[in-house]
Image 1 (tube, rainbow, N blue to C red):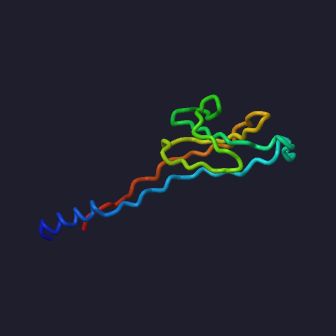
Image 2 (cartoon, helix red, strand yellow; image 1 turned 90 degrees about the vertical axis):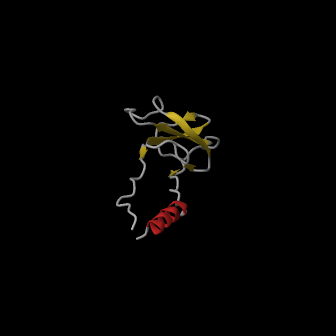
Image 3 (cartoon, helix red, strand yellow; image 1 turned 120 degrees about the vertical axis):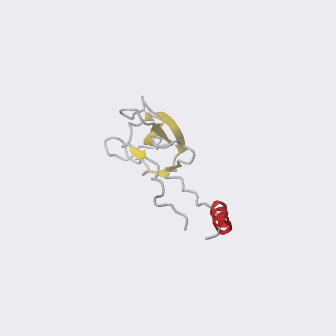
Length: 121
């Protein structure tokens, strides 16, 4: 292969569009019941959800150790994580006029691995 063809191949490789990795979206089920499993009474409907994040090195991820990564107005039940640091551990709380719920289960978001066996032929 001539040096000119190699250079042209590298140039085309650099100019090729790169597919951006889609940011993950955190999804959850709407809260419609209280801690006893009974339907929420009139006026006690969830008004928003708080999404908390804990970075690496934090032991137990909780409201005390996490930071609010976003607030979502009900009835929406998702948050786009674009622009937020990775890796992170997330959990969600529900908020109504009576206060804020306990933490949901946590979910760890980590980056994908790097492509392997990259080569130029």
